[in-house]
Image 1 (cartoon, rainbow, N blue to C red):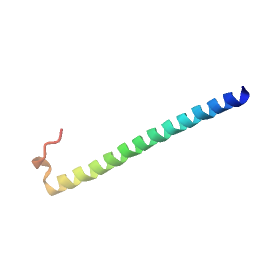
Image 2 (cartoon, one colour):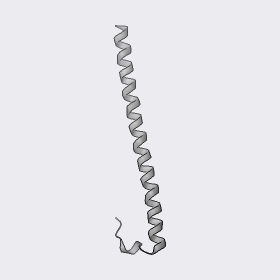
Image 3 (tube, rainbow, N blue to C red):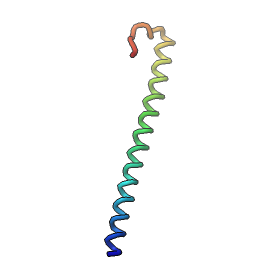
Image 4 (spheres, rainbow, N blue to C red):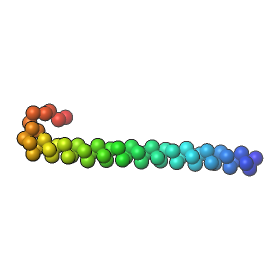
Length: 56
């Protein structure tokens, strides 16, 4: 009984850990994309090309 309970707790902790890893990866991806977009947008503005693109 006790071993079964420990096994269930371990599985739950592993699931929580995996979910946290996924959330961190998604957050990092959003940060990287945002940073890249800001750089690209700045380059377009510097080159005067921003008016050729319709950004929504």
